[in-house]
Length: 287
Image (tube, one colour):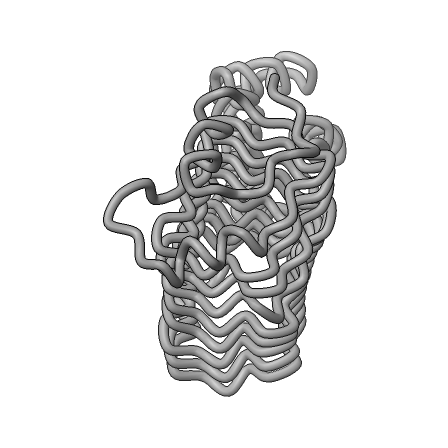
């Protein structure tokens, strides 16, 4: 009958095999059940009656085991999220979950965060050159004033991500949607953008000189005080895009005239703002 008790518990705990707390609970419970079975036998109960009474004595054990296992799994999934002031160059963080992780003041040069969920994490004052964030969830992440030269953000989830004052020379944003992202006061003249959608992005006071933004979509984007010399928006779509319209210097007017909007589509308000700055809109389609 002891083997039957063991077999019964194995069945109850089978879905939670490998969960440490469930394994420990199983061992303790087996010992208790065996003791209870011995007591019932000592009272003169036959094997089957003793077995049934032993099992009944533990109540709804399956629900208890499930609750313990779920709690254990939740705890086991949690990783250490404070990696501040660490030398982590070329580290492998691919696929990890580290919500509100601290990667501040750390060496993260050429580290791999591909596919990681880094929601709410901070990389303040870290060296993040040539790091890979392809496919990573960077919602609410803070990359303020960082060296992100050569970093890759292919298909990254970028929602309310803060890149303000960061160095992004050679950084690659490919097939990405940037939503409410802060790219203010950045030198983006050597940043690579391909097949991106910019929704609510703020480029205020950033240097976009010479950027190719052909065919991309801009929704509610702000270019206030941004350097736009020789920027190309060929075939792009611009809706509710904000350009400065007052207190403009002659230098800014000259810069706007160098921007290429050939083949672009834009709403009436965006068109009117650019027309007021004497941009060349001869090949633009108003939508």
